[in-house]
Image (cartoon, rainbow, N blue to C red):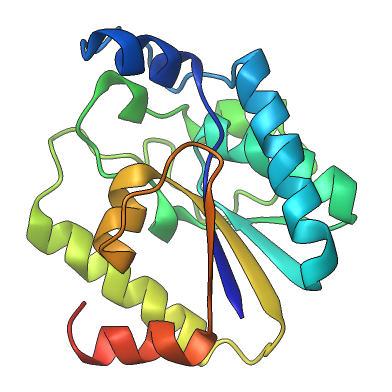
Length: 184
């Protein structure tokens, strides 16, 4: 089983959802409402036997994952493949050296200093990342239950579904792998 989860509400989401104008907030933190959404997601995940927790390196996903990890007593694995598609100010990430400083308990090994890109990511590039993540899931020897904290754009490309902040989708591992075989 794989649980796909969109990060909880960030400061960027709070402004953009009202105005539809990019507020110019790079790598924003969660709002208070977002922290409550993350706590609710942790409650929904509590009975599902999640054994691994993967998160994109953006602050909003790391904060969401940290709330979940604390409730479920799980370590967080940083997974750059599930990062957001670079398109808005919120998609300007935090340099790896600062992430290491702010999140010393997490392993950012192999994460380049500037890891988020600088131009709007093409459909082809995003599809390639989705395929690479499907391969990673297929090659993973752990058959356990995995939760993945990611982003609207990545999850849309990965599943074809739109996710609200803090929402989750439970999918059987085999279905995710089969979707990849069809090029989804």
